[in-house]
Length: 222
Image (tube, rainbow, N blue to C red):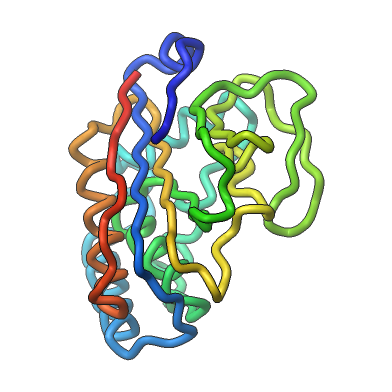
């Protein structure tokens, strides 16, 4: 369950955050079915975005660009899309649970963080970053957050924020059996898009893990 602070609701009117928790999963290093789906996603994206202007003007990209601009940052998913669409790069093969998230992220444009559900210390709280808060990023760096950003924390500290992404402590591992996906959507992106995105992740996971079961799925709206 994700608890939502009143500060978050007041700070981000029109925003939404989704949470999907899947049980009975595995995290293979390679899936033939997932590889085939990657090629389909890449082709669809290249047909959807015929030039850079069509990508930049996409409503989802615009919503994130506006959010990131407040923090003097650029939306990294747009940059990743440009690499796949215009430079011919393939979606990398890393680990199934991570690839499923990344494929859906590229396809919808919605920012997503993945966590090992069993590593999280309940409760989870959706809130706003304050000054001088810190957490350890995926790369092991201790990062001071940007005040005023969306973030989620568990009982032990921040697990992700929009600007700096997921933490190291609760990251998806080869041994992960229960996985949590968090979708951050700023104002301008409807809740239906968030639900669809979560369903897409689940569909990709089912390609290599047909027994995966939904433990929790919810979307919170400011």
